[in-house]
Length: 514
Image (tube, rainbow, N blue to C red):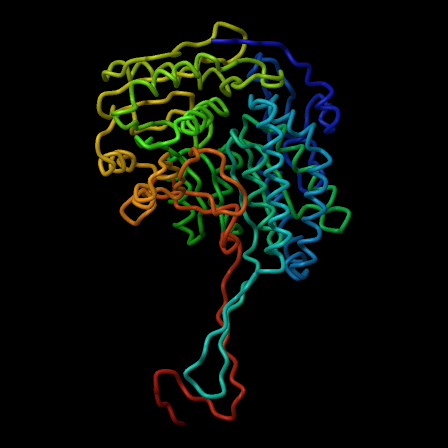
């Protein structure tokens, strides 16, 4: 397995994004809130363990100031015509374009994505801004025919309010943008609690948007609070000023958020765990399948919610294809994510490395066989080897998502059984089949086929694009973001009936004459 490791000086990247202060504020009500703090957080580069920067954690008082400021701006923003809101979002997208090289490099530095993935994440933010601009002229309601003469019925959509966004480390920029750009054109304010493992990307992203908002007199419509759950997280999910909490993270976290928000009759938009499988049929284009599986399982070091965790190979191709897959894994270049040619960077931290090691030990204890990888790379930083584990039947460990490059490979005889095994996990995010058989593809996509929110044919489980609604079923949480009609989550529906007659008849023929 090729390993190319080299240190990268982040000073120029941080300077380009205005992040060179010794301690950066962790609360932003538009501009930064300085003064008190709830302690200091260090952001680490997982490639070498060095400290990238320090952030002052937000206090409860600062949280309150951020929310109040966003609420004040929302009261004005909701009355701005949606196309005008779209124009301001367009300008945000242009600023992300201008800052794409530096921000993409910072994503790589702070969370370990390889260079193309760091840039690709910022491109996702640009794409969702473009999508939102077009959407700003398409927030359509329906018109209905009334049973009463001289009456007209229609529905319309209004801004919902303040949106709380809680994001995970693995997409420190794009997932927030999925929410923020759509919420903005829908007329909402947004308060963001990012992962404590990626605070610098959050600050840089917030500042890019704040510069645009301030130029139009809406400084603070977007707020940022970087803080611990005790000071910020619990307060946010209990806060009735947020009619919607959009959260990305673990299923355990989602259960807590969903319960608390439901108790106050709020809405939750949850993007939680994935445990994604690929079925490879005997008639598949195996070259395509190899590339789709490799990127799905190894991309972002297996730290995507859509990462491929399981593969089911038809028994007639299993031996040869597994050998090809092992060979491909052994050619993966591991190392500094900003070095050209690197295909896999580090895991986010040493806790992630320990989970990787524990999952492999558990799998072996349950009868799995390590075909390649399985070890930590003995270099500075949180590096591991991408790992393939063969299984006879499904292992109990496969019921759980491990955020690491571990791929479980099994065989099947009958497509119905492969689909059943793919679905037989608590999560339901992404799924794929590689086949050139029309009937097999349609069976996989049919009502008794994949039970996931995303079902693909001849592409992998990872790499969803803006435009299609992203999200999954079961313990994945049921949320939908980033495309289709997902904008409706950020608005409230209102049904209107107008009487233009000289009478006031009641529906359903009810009489009430006075």
